[in-house]
Image 1 (cartoon, one colour):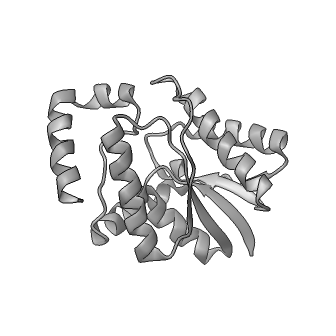
Image 2: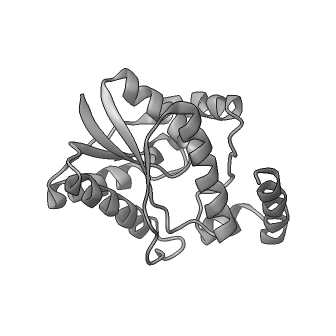
Length: 182
């Protein structure tokens, strides 16, 4: 079995990817590092939801401390920061490969993730698993519903929040969700 460190953006995206990795003989460990998530209450909610999934699925997860926030709306910078931190941790802790749950989303820039992941793998001397998990997107959403996991409506950064939602309406919904998950 290959040891794989899986950058994990959120629990819903982890569900199908984790299942696929298990079925394909990978020993996966999640790596939650997402300094892009805005606001802080959203970050806390996603982290708590991943802890819930971790307890249900047995996926081991490393929770890395966030550092400098990437520029909102700059996807390349955001992917770079998160994947590089994952790769460095993976190499330092004897993982064979790293990958990311971002690869399940039809809303992410797959070619850019693939390019950045491959470059980082070469620079950091660790393998990068690129697999197009998008075929499992709907299955992952079904699993998230089955496990009663919080399913967010935006990637996490403030720019994506403003693109898709009225921020005040989001803050109201956020408070209600935080209370519900307390």
